[in-house]
Image (cartoon, rainbow, N blue to C red; front, side, top):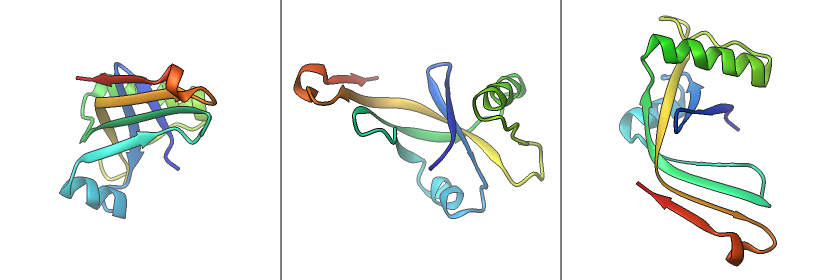
Length: 107
């Protein structure tokens, strides 16, 4: 499970760039993000890139602190990097009436 924040029409998460996830992202930045909830489903396809904007990183730290009671350290040498996923395709639906609630977005 990855903690993350939705902001500015993107999904942000963190990982160590030397971890399996980080190495895989450096080789292939295509990702699929989804909620754990099987009843209220959201699936997002996109590309992950390292977030470098100091002002955005500061805002994300505040959002992480509020949502998770945790303030990430994305400073150089910390071992963690923030990634931004810009959605290309998204699907969403609610059970039990998936066929009536299905929504698809493509950019």
